[in-house]
Amino acid sequence: MTTATPDRRGDLFDPDCPTRRLLDRVGSKWTSMAVKVLAEAAPGEVRFAELRRRMPGVSQKMLSVTLRGLVRDGLAARRVEPTVPPAVHYRLTALGLSLEEPLAALRAWAEAHMAEVERNNRRADAAPGGGGGA
Image (cartoon, rainbow, N blue to C red; front, top):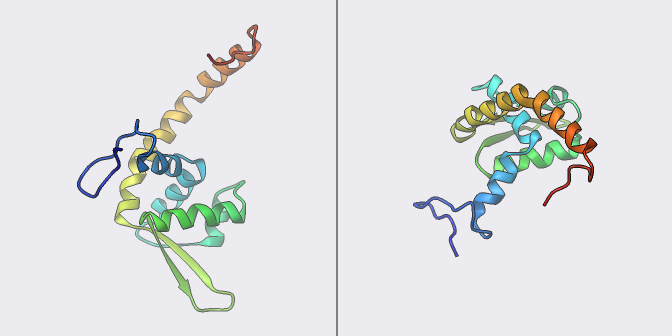
């Protein structure tokens, strides 16, 4: 089994490699949006409620799950003010800031090619057999 260790890179093609799980997490739309909002505020912090306002469509639960994952992975830091109710703030760590550049490139690619992909989807859906897989 090939798994990542602190001194070795992972192997994306190994089904047991944690690289796959990491890519699933950082490749989600909510992670990309949260990292973008937090990067725009860097080095400052953003409160949970503000993150939710700036990420249309995200539920409170999904935002909580996303932020919990970012904190667990060391990509974001969480600070709680002991007020009633508690004020929860998030900021990107240095590791999280290093993720913004590749995510920004992916977002830019998606925005630049969205219309072409949509056309291809419509064409495939209209084709006999519905443009299915293999």
